[in-house]
Image 1 (cartoon, helix red, strand yellow):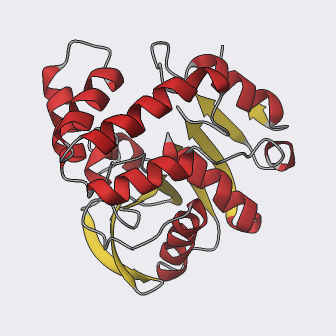
Image 2 (spheres, one colour; image 1 turned 180 degrees about the vertical axis):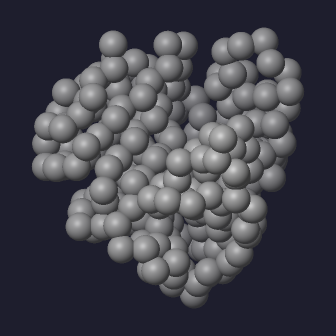
Length: 238
């Protein structure tokens, strides 16, 4: 068995913001891009396996985890965070894996910097807000607007995200979400409601894997199949 490399934490500059990143393993670079409200710690259960095969790099996007919180935000800003980290590490071309919002960031990154992408893994994500998901999206925004802090939304996300009877996983999700800046989290949620990468997907020319989850209510398998059907070099989920 290949020995897992030591974990390495650091910070880098992205447009004047101090952002945190993490590295482990050796080989081809694999950039992990987290979802809404998540952070480096959200990948805890994947690091060991991934680092046996790749040089794994994860970051706290601006506003999340231990990274600085900006006043305004766009998906383009998140993609630039990834670009600035890759430049900081001297990486020319990388494999990108994005979960949920991270998948959206992957699409935006490919739109801006296609020459820097070797492959894409889009996990439980969306390319636009489907009509069927509009009600849940509005429910999230109303919950955020009516809550004094992140406690209620953390409970909501944990119950919705973890299908299995795994109280320790639900508690981990709650802990991570509760630490978020509520104002920034709300801004990002609203930003995600405006995305549309339908025209970009047919232009993606790198090998792409779309991953879905059977019981995912936010980004259900049908949405993943729609994304996969629009990308030429894509493995389509069953």
